[in-house]
Length: 101
View 1 (tube, rainbow, N blue to C red):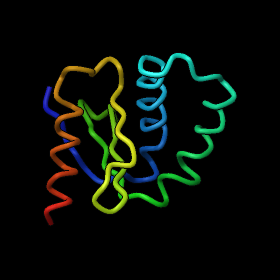
View 2 (cartoon, rainbow, N blue to C red):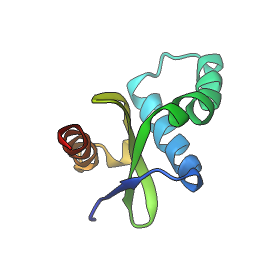
View 3 (cartoon, rainbow, N blue to C red):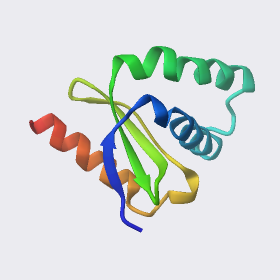
C-alpha cells in the first residue's frame, strides 16, 4: 500500500498517539505505565508544538510520524504493524529532504 507523507494537523493526534504507543510497546517494553502516561500528555502539549512534524498515512490512517527540530530528528515512530514496510524509510527521506531545503 502506498505511503503518503504530509504535515501533521491537530486532527492527526489520535493516530500519532496510537502509532507512538504501538512502537513503544515493541521497542521499549520496560517503560513503566507512569512514564507512558506522562509522555501521552507531553506529546501533544510539549513536543508537537515545538517540532516540525510529518505523518505517514496509509489507506487514510496515520501509521507513523517524524518530528524534526531544526535539522535533527527529535522522534520517529511507526506503528508496529507497519515495521519493515518502508514507512520509516519514507519518513526519514522526508526529513533528509527538509534538511536540504
